[in-house]
Amino acid sequence: MKRSVILSAVFCATVLVAGLSGQPTAQATPVGPMPSATIATRPDLSLFSTTTCSSPGWSPDLSMADLIVGAVVNLTGSGSGYQGKVMMTDGPHAASFGIQYDTKSFGGDAYSNQAVFLSENVAPETGYFTYQTWCIGQLGTDMPVMMAYFSSDQTVAFFVAGIYIGSQWTQLTADAERGVEGDVKHNGDSVNATISNIIIGSKGMTWVPTRFIEMHQGPGLSISKAAGSTTYNLNAHVEGTASGFGPRQDWDSNPEAASAVVFLQGDPVDNAALPMAQFTESPDMTADGRGDVLAVDSAGALWMYPGTPTGALGTPVFPLASGFKNLDIFSPGDVDGDGKADVLAINRLTGNLLLYSGNGSAPLNLPRQIGNGWKNWRLIPAGDLTGDGKPDLLGIDTAGDLYVYPGKGNGLFATKAKVGYGWSTWDLYAAGDLNGDGRADILGIDDLGNLFQYAGKGNGTFRMKVQAGNGWLGYTLVAGADLDGDGLADIIGRENMSHTLYYYRGLGNGTFKKKVPIATGW
Image (tube, rainbow, N blue to C red; front, side):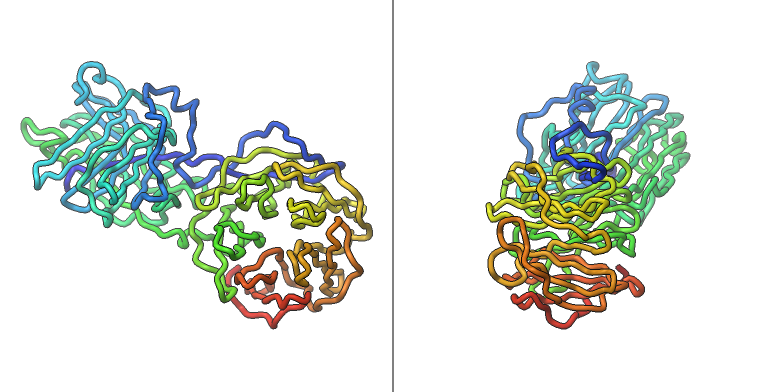
């Protein structure tokens, strides 16, 4: 086995939280720890500051990266040299990035006898070897690292704590395998490397690998494979004392004796833990002119399923974030006025309301708290009810009174105004423009399972209800988006007993075509 490369990256907090209890508010307030997201590029300046690394002040566009691999490496050991890293290899060529301790570092005395961030690009068959010591890190500390390969200019880019530190030319190809690895320098050297929160990805998207597909262990070394605390946290542990080197050999002259490696595999769709705990329609997360579906699976991961011209759901591109087991999600459209659809969430335990600004492609931006007191309220992201072009919210209190919160277009909302009552036994849904008059409407289901449309007047109030269906007992309904891109709002319903998902194409007059099954296991 040629000497390979390892790279690690950290999952970062990207979760929306929201809540209703008492009198909900909409001003920004401090927010506590957030659930983690499956993206390795969130910068952690406080952790970065514990190293001597520096950034050039710019970063390559990860949406152009063919391959991404990352993990959090915690390295200890003893002897003359040991490493923990992430890697890519296509057989003849290999690249890696991670943490190394060496009594005689490639970087000279300034980097010897301490933890350093080291990259390697090697092609032994052509005699190409490039090693670079970048900066000083820490032993026995979680160190997030990431590496991205770009075929467009044959480079690999390196990141520490989500911050770009530099690139190297490489002979890698886009069909390279990705893995994690631990190494030692000589016989008698020991390594103890915990490599956690492993991710892989491509084109700016990252996900958690679901399978270890191949393993190599040098004499005296072992690599154990274990799932982490959730489905979305795959870990590996390398330990042992090397015993396979010949006389005067080291980790460069005998890499097979030096290393313990495991390779990773798994597509984004492999990760979804069905059935879905909750789901909602989004006006358009991907900026393709069609609505999408956001869903939280039974493990608490947030997924996005793009809409298609037929109304069926496209393949999920990536899990946007994890840690949503105690959150209720909502997709109100562009709340902050940047032209990209956002996400709201309510924390059922705290009642805090959070805004996740969308960025149009990659996972959600970091959240900010925009309200509290929502614990015992129901929130409905109702679209533009007031006719000012800004998405508004509806809230139902414990007495069943209905309030509108006009959006300000900057992620915040104005003081609520009461617009209805008697909703304590009803379920209420944002519906988009159901009747083609350019105004946002809502749907309601009464305690008998009857479905009603309330046409919006464009001033935050609604016309008298008109029945649009029946038989909705035992179903979960979501609405508020044009899933097929025909300009008419559609709805989705889940039969809760069978976990079958159905699509109802909107006709533009407040009614819908006959349901069509589009997914099972939900």
